[in-house]
Length: 161
View 1 (cartoon, rainbow, N blue to C red):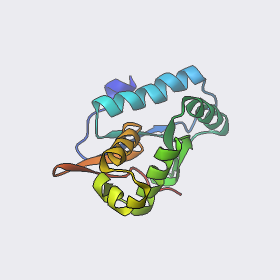
View 2 (view 1 turned 90 degrees about the vertical axis):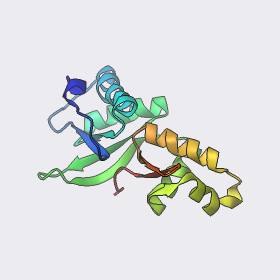
View 3 (view 1 turned 90 degrees about the horizontal axis):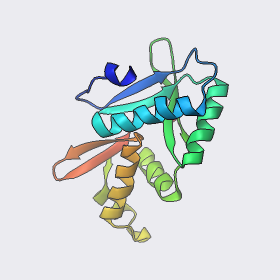
């Protein structure tokens, strides 16, 4: 139902999975509904970026445990009455290379792999490795990927709290 109701979008668009009235969710539900939808959207609807919103404590705890066990991460936030994003944050884990890449993009904003290679040249990481890290974060829906001539620009989907 969720997949059938989701339409492609031209500009990159967050798809908020609003858990406002959900008190309990099992790991199997979260695997199929959240992770399954996220993976489907990122592979088939390239401009749709799923975000979990308004998680109740029990659901947040279950989801956090589940994504950490997978070595995965998702955007989470609260939505106010006007659907404005409040308190955006990552839940789950990123490996150290992905974490440092994600933090660099959060700090710098939209950036390309060659720009990261130039900026962090002392780390000895080339543009291809930076691009692989950025692409992996975009595949998780954490970064927005935009074509920019022959290269790609990556930026955070949401602003962190």
